[in-house]
Length: 259
Image (cartoon, rainbow, N blue to C red; front, side, top):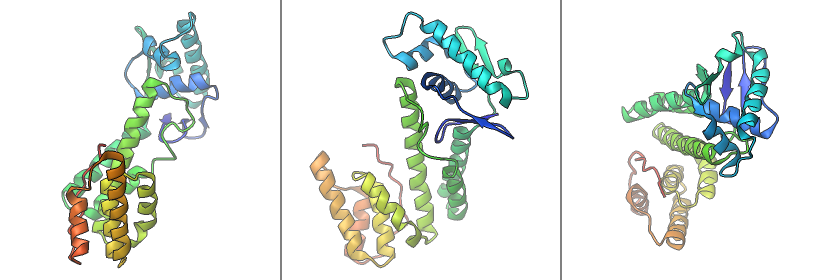
């Protein structure tokens, strides 16, 4: 049995799939999956479901949601469901071996290592493979509380970092023409993200579109000045100066945006 969180929440086995339809049981399953193989206290589940204003019946209600989940998961498991969705002291634990977000992180780490070692082809393959595990935004159909919100934000930041690294690998492999549309969309959605703008400028420059590359820089600079009172720095500025001088631009240098 596998629980997938990189997209709509989904539980799958070899022959079937299922997902809770009710909002709060879906939240419980999502939090247990993201903290798989550890005990999630009843108090944390209550905090996720109701924040600081739980009903008097919160503990019993959580127990009811866990019972519903066990009934949902039973047809998907070859082993007794109580050995998978277990009751522990003060909480519950979902015992899983197959987690799509963990596979994503493992492939991403291997891809990052390959990129650092200069093996762009292997890095591109691994990073493309990591991103292929995503079926949409993390927990796209789950109403998230404070705890799940933090997990989702972390996953989305990790995904964006892998996208940057994968674009880096593609640029090193001379695939600039194939990623222009993607970079156009990304920079439109993230107007203050310096590294993505630098990658877009480099791809445009290598595609013979020097004027458009300079326009991208000017658009970024204007957005940074208006929003943050800052100017582009680091590798982005190096790319800009190289384009102005019609010089060769070296390999991309990832500078993960933390603004």
